[in-house]
Image 1 (cartoon, helix red, strand yellow):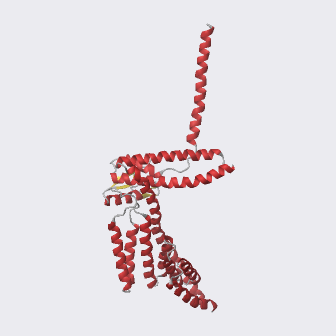
Image 2 (image 1 turned 90 degrees about the horizontal axis):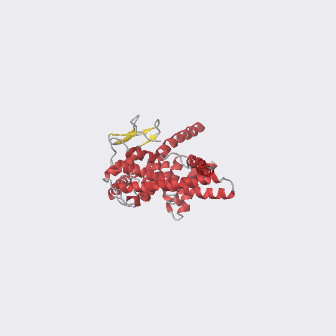
Image 3 (image 1 turned 45 degrees about the vertical axis):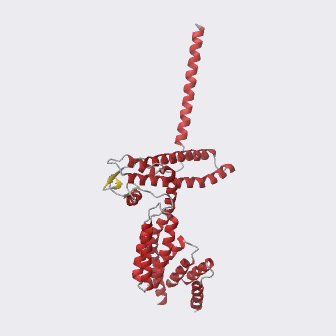
Length: 177
Length: 194
C-alpha cells in the first residue's frame, strides 16, 4: 500500500514539475518573441508574399522585380545593422545601455540572416544560381537608387531657387528705387 | 501585415483604390512596376552585376553629341532639349546597371546643360544643374566653375567667388577658373567699395 502511494506521489511530482517548467519556458519564449523588433515592418517582403498569392497569378517578371526590392531592403538593413553594432557594443561595454537591448539586437540579427537565406532560396527557384548574385545586384541597385533620387531633387530645387531668386530680385529693385 | 494588392492591366495596384501609389493604403507599387518594365525589356534576364547593355549608352552618347553640336552653333535652346532628353534616359537606367557609369554620364550632361543655361542667362537652372554636377563629382573643377558663373548671374557675388576658389583648389592649373576669378575679384571687388 505504502509503496503504491509512494509511486503515485513520485509520478505526480514529476508531472507537476514538468508543468511548472513548461509554464516558465512558454513565458520566456513569449518574452523573446514580444521583444521589440529592430526594424519596422518589412514592406517589400510583405509585397512579395502578397504577389506570390495573387489571383490572377503575377508574371515571373513581376515576382522577380518584387524579390529584387525585397533583397534591396535586406541590403539596407544589413548595412544599417553593421553601423549600429559598433555603436551598441561600445555603449553596452560602457554600461550606458542594458543587456536587453543587446539581446534584442542579436535576435534581430538572426532574423535578418534567416530572411536573407530565404531570399536566396527564392531566387534560386526562378533561375539556378541566381541566389549567388542577387545580393550583389541588390547592393548595386541600392546605390543606384540614390543617384536616381537626384533627379527628383533637381526638379524640386529648381522651383525653390526660382522663388528665392524672384524674391531677391524684388528686394534689389526695391532698394534701387 | 498582409498587403492588399491586385494586378490590373499588367500593373500591380492596391486592391481597394486601384492606385500604384496609394497614400490611404500606405503602399507604393511603382518601384515594382518600374522594375518589371525594365525586366520586360530584357526578357526577364538580369545581367550579371557590373554588365551594361550597350544600346542605352549609345543612345545617350548620340544625344549628347547632338546637344554639343547645337551648342557650338549657338543654338542653345536646342542644346538644352537634347541634353534634357539624354539626362532623362540616363536617369531611367535599370537600377541594376552600375551606379558609377550613370553618375559619370549625368555629371557631364548636367555640366553641358548648365553651360547652355548660362549662355541663355537662365541662372537658376544653371545653378541647380551645377550643384547637381558637384554632388555627383565633387573634385571636378568644371562643376565649380559653372556654379560660380551661375552665382554671379544671380547677383550672389561673394558665393560665386567662393565657388571659383573651391574649384581652383581641386584643379590649380585650370586656366579658365584663374581667369574668371581674376575678373570677378576686379569687377565685384570694385562694386563692394562703391
